[in-house]
Image (cartoon, rainbow, N blue to C red; front, top):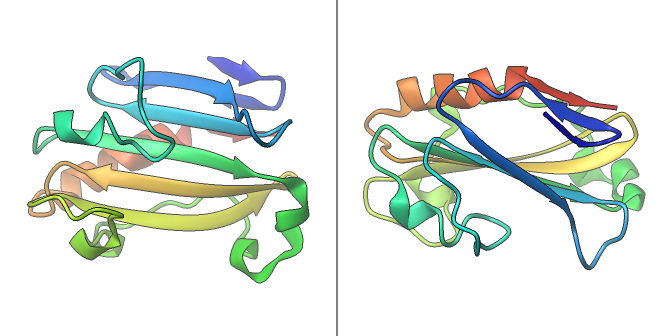
Length: 143
């Protein structure tokens, strides 16, 4: 699936993906992916989606920042992250949701600055949840 000329994603079975240009920062993208159907109205970081997650579900947001951010310390990590189960934490969520776990990673690739935000439907099942996130991210190509 091509989101734009510089972003492609091979979507694993059972995932739903939607992408769009960010309204307030021209030339940047927002990509949502989840193992549940994506509601038409949802917040940048998953409000509207997260309440629908069951314990075996996951949500992923790839949020692009403007290109000036690439050279900053926050985005010094290079390449799309590969989150490990131990990196997910219930307190990493903007709003704590009982039983859920999340993580946030900042990175740059191809001269573009990104935030990866991922939520697992169950902290107790973070091993299989993290594997699902990894399977999705292996299909991401940013140019």
